[in-house]
Image (cartoon, rainbow, N blue to C red; front, side):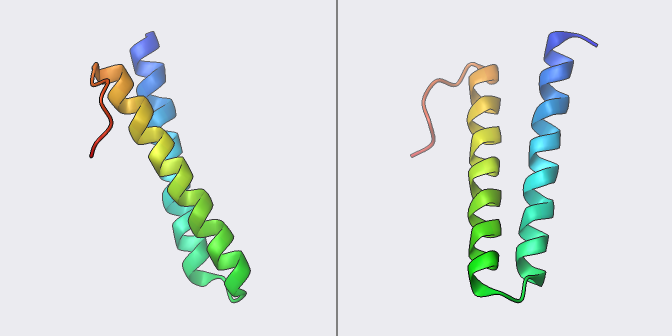
Length: 63
């Protein structure tokens, strides 16, 4: 697999994991656990978006 293909696969894995964490947060009974999972999902999603923009040549983050 090429480097760009590996990067795309890794970014997709990050997005998938963020979705899993978001779903787990919705099922969590404990409010603190729910918040922790939601925050982790948000950070992972944000990280994948930043890396995607960097790979795409967009050096400016969204406003």
